[in-house]
Length: 335
Length: 288
Ligand SMILES: Nc1ncnc2c1ncn2[C@@H]1O[C@H](COP(=O)(O)OP(=O)(O)O)[C@@H](O)[C@H]1O
Ligand SMILES: [Mg+2]
Image 1 (cartoon, each protein chain N blue to C red):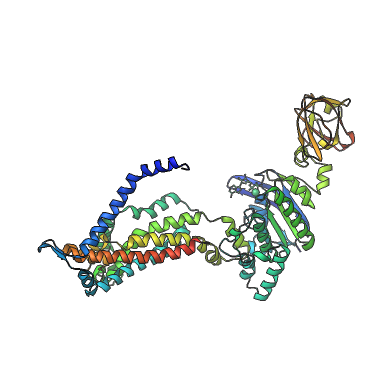
Image 2: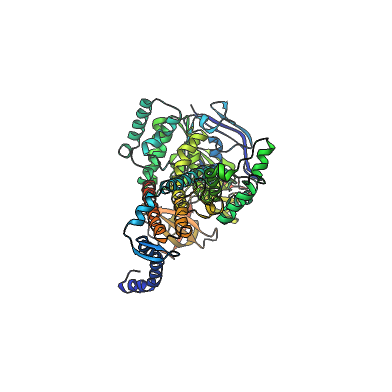
């Protein structure tokens, strides 16, 4: 079990309020991702759940029991840190065994769990090495192993992949997702990378300056962002925002249209502009279009084989059924 | 520094410094070794010729030799034990956020800036004087008989004085090491269910291992040759005659340079044995 409820939780460091009153429920077995720009309070929120920081007010409940004053070790949660926080002078085996040793678990049970975790995480050959002799990905796995053997009611991850190179990150993303499917344990995952959030989450919590901007499944957030911030944060490349006359045509202050919902043509379309930089990814090409009179740049996604050059005049047509409308406060207007 | 040319230029430019340093070290060393093979009594006939290993045999067979080695090792060991244990505790304390941290840290470090002669005099006259010392007053206040520290508890007194001088050094090095400990490691251990004591034993202490060996190594080298503290307090009496002090007595009080030099060579050998021993421990510790 691992249902975590935050009830009007706040956190201040001295006079600065990092988390204003916040309510959130993380369901048992759910993969929840906290996403938001750096410094928005994601780590602080996670550390409040872990018990590494005391809440300034409010209540944290785990499986219905008040855990606000419970020390971190007694909450039954395991955390994987951004720096991995392995114990450098202990072997991998001792690192993984540490929480069990602290709980005075019988040796046979410890060995059984270590072997199982090592097998699941491909660490069997490295059990006698020190963390310093491992690669970044392996260290990451040791940190996860140390969390798994405790059989916690929930896992907490604080940007666990940000120290890995891009290729490894994609691999570890899959492994963590698979681990979640296998264990079916609650996982709370913090990242500033919306791609990680979109690919891994059951539920995304978008944070800005300690505020929850929106909670929902990845596709909910993609299809119906509640405000301009979420609209701009979720999806890559960013949604295009257009204000002024063009927006007035749709009875709103701002319209948003994603790059993948614009068609580009050399001969005709609703808007016209000049090609600036184009990013060729092979499968797709992203064109940055200038001089449209709508916004400084409009980003457009096209098929990888579409070949406009720098300086070409092109015509753009948005898919009107995929248009997002926002009012003067930046809130979504539903049709 | 890659090309042949730049390498030889570098060598030429470093040469004066290297030669100066070598001379600085080698000349006194060679002279000590030469004198140790001579009967040399400046006030009783001067250089009386070569005597082979006579001085070495006499120095060792003197009844004062082994007690002096023992005194040296007791002082070094005692001071090391006290400075490391209290250094770790003080470093733990100073690492906590507290009010007036900067001032407290400076106060803790202050004894290191006091000259050994001065600090020994202060201890001897202000604290340990059997009549007017603060300790004597304290003892009298509680109705106890004042102790004449430097004669009745000479060894502990000297260890106390020297420890007081070296504690700041140990604390400073250990505090720096403590501050380099990744706080996430401690938090991870906390979440793993480690008690504060277990966190200290499993995380903090191993992390300090290297710093502790550095403290031990550097202090040993300096402590083997402490002199001023003994000269100012007990003058080598009451079992506090260390090897260094014995050599001093042979050379200056007995005016026997040959015998003193032989003692000096023994001291060099002892220091090297200790250093080699410590290097092996450090080597083991550095090789994580
Ligand atoms: N121990 C602390 N003392 C004071 N301010 C802190 C402390 N920890 C975090 N903060 C502040 O809280 C805000 C949120 O930090 P954090 O939760 O680490 O952000 P994120 O993980 O989203 O990047 C930041 O502005 C940071 O400066
Ligand atoms: Mg963070």
